[in-house]
Image 1 (cartoon, rainbow, N blue to C red):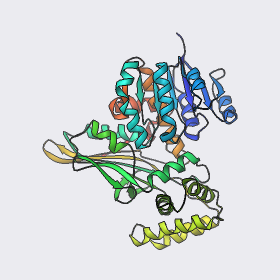
Image 2 (image 1 turned 180 degrees about the vertical axis):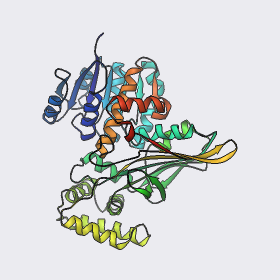
Image 3 (image 1 turned 120 degrees about the vertical axis):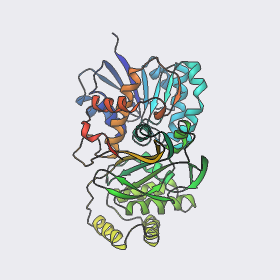
Image 4 (image 1 turned 135 degrees about the vertical axis):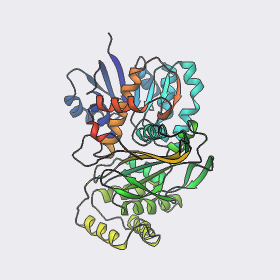
Amino acid sequence: MTAQHVVFIGAAGEMCRVAIERFARADGDWRLTLCDIRPEILHPLVKRLPAGRATVRKLDLYDRTALLEVVTGASLVVLGAGPYIRTSEPVISACLEAGVPYLDFDDDVESTQHALSLDERAREAGIPIYVGCGASPGMSNVMAVDAANELDTVETIELGWVVGDERPNVGRAVLEHLMHIAAGDCLTWEHGGPVVHESYVETGVLPMGGGLGETLLYETAHPEPVTLPRRYPQAERIRCLGGLDPMPFNGLARGLGLAVQDGRLTVDEAVDYIQEVLHNRFTDTRGLRHALSGMVGQIRRGEMAPGEMAAFLAKSALRRTYEWRGGLLAKVTGTRDGRPATAVRRTPISGPKLYMVNSMGGLTGTATAAFMVLALDETGKRSGSFAPEEWAEPEAFYTALERVGTPRREIVESLC
C-alpha cells in the first residue's frame, strides 16, 4: 500500500509543530512534507520524528506556482499558517484546483464563512474542505454535539475556552487574532437568528475544569456561533465565551483592542506591545496606558478586584509568571423527556506537565492531529465544505485523540 502523503503549510508555527509531532504517533503509513517560509525552524522537529518520515521544504504560500506544485497529489493538505483571514483563501484555492483534501484550524469568522461558501465548488472538485479543526473551534464543537446528544431538544449552546499564562511563547499570528476578537463586531446567534454584538462586552460564568472552577468569560467573535446553527437551527442562543488566565490579561487585551478599533494604535503596534509584556519588558508607555485602561475598566464593571490587578502588575514587574491553567467546555440546555435539562462536556484537567491540556499549542495541535487521523480514515468518502460538528462524531474523535497519544483522563468529562 502506498503511504498517504500529508502536506503541512506553515509547519513551523507552534501549534502546527505540535500537530505534526502528535500526528506522527498515530498508527498508519504517512509521508510528511513540512513547508514553511522559515524551514530552518523545522529541522529539530524532523529529528524527533521517525527516520525518513518527513522532509522539509521552503514555501511562500503566496507563490501560486510553488504552492500548486507542492499540494498536487497530496492525500491531505493542512494549513497551519495564520492569520487565516489572509492565508486560507490562496491555499484552499490551490487545493480546489489540484483536487486534494484540505484541513485547517481556522478561528476567524470571515475566513470560515468563505470556506463554507465553497461547498459547491468542493463537491465539483470531489474533495472535502475541513475548516476549524483545532481546539476552539474544533474540539469544542464536537463536545457540544456530544452534550446535545443527551437531550431531546436544544435551546442554548455555550462554548467556553480559557488560555493560561504562556509568557513568552506566543506568536504574532495568535496575538493578531486576539486583537481581532478583543473589540469590534461579534457575529453570534440569539433569539433563533444571527445578530451582531460587540466582542468582549457581554459576559457569562461557566464551570470550567482544569482547576479553574466557576469562571467569568467574555463573548468573543469566534466561528462556533456561525457554524453550529447549521446543525441546530432551532436553538434560541449559541455563543462562544472565552478568556485569559489570569484575569487582568483580559483587560489588557480589551484596552489594546479598543485602541486599535478607534485608530489610536495599529494592530502591529498593539502586538509589539503585547510581545513586550510577554517578555517582561515595559518600555512602551503608550501601549501600557491602553492596557491599564482596559484593566481599570474591569474593576469598574466588577469583573475583578483591584488587588488582582495590583498583584498581576507586581508579579509582572518581578518577571514572574502564573502556572498555566486552561481548557474547553460545552454547555447545552434543552429538554429531556419533556423536562428542562442541561448537559456539559469539559476538559477535566490542565497543567504544564500534561500531554494535551498544557498550553494553547498543546490543546490545539493535539486536537488537529486527531481531526487529521479521522479525515485520512475517511479519504474519498465525502466532498464539500464542513465544520467539525458536521462530520466528526464525538466517540470517533475521542478515540482519535487517544490514537495520537492523549491519555483518556485528559480528554473529556461529563456534568449533568
